[in-house]
Image (tube, rainbow, N blue to C red; front, side, top):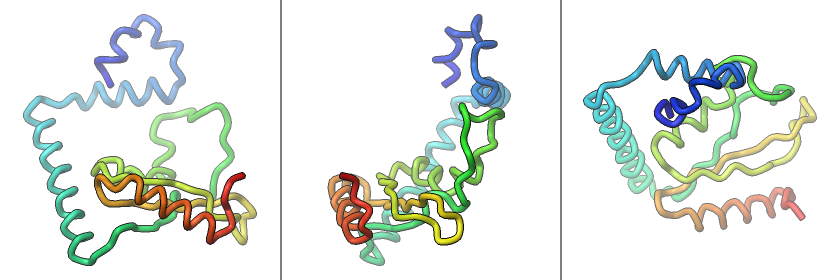
Length: 146
């Protein structure tokens, strides 16, 4: 990320405050090559542990809420970096481990009246199976987009 954005350093003041905040955070946490390899090794180990668990329990798909909170009103983007921790608290883990995820509408919250969604997490390499499971779930819930 940092290498890509270096070419825009002369225009950084034009970035949204949240994007500038993410870049500044990234710059303050720059990793050595050794630290990067160690992080990738941890990621691979976590992915392998999930693969083993899914196989052991014969699970093809995990279903979980996409976000664990009632949706907040959104404007033109985040005003500050890292104000979306609650929104990504469930999804970032699957992004980190590389499992395919499909988020789909699942209805309207009983108390909030706002749209809600679920995420389906599938096995590595089973993207089409995951999409088929998502389509079947949407049909069952009656939330199929026309």
